[in-house]
Image (cartoon, rainbow, N blue to C red; front, side):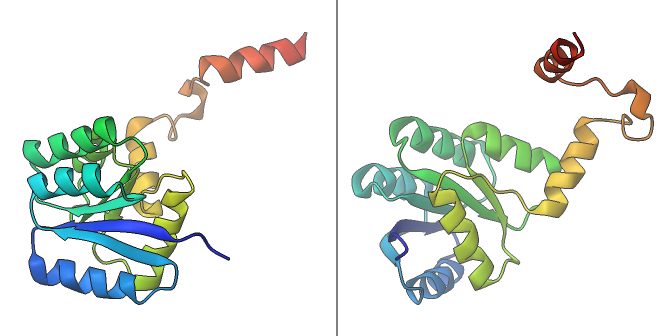
Length: 165
């Protein structure tokens, strides 16, 4: 049997948040333990309800990034999943650096969202594959165009050298 996931849903667009909540509540093994619409409510609910996951959908501002940081620091057992329409590389990086474990696009289907949240509950992180691939290419610059320029991480390189000896 699948372990029950306790989730708080915080969306600054109440109608959208209600729709997400309805989808999640219909799933066996999912319990909504709180709902909110603001950053302040997100922090309060995360710290007082201690859900497994808080699903945040707030405008991406310094305030929402700070909300992620506070929840990640003050409630380390609660994993932050950020639900957004933005596909901007900088937004993904900012949200993950702030402490979110998942960056989820709003065009996701209900069953896909459930799957992502279940994987986040088990300690995995999530970024949509196409966005993750784009970020990897960006972070490696033109190393993929010129593979001879690619430098293996130090630990990998050290392991390879020790095997050669």
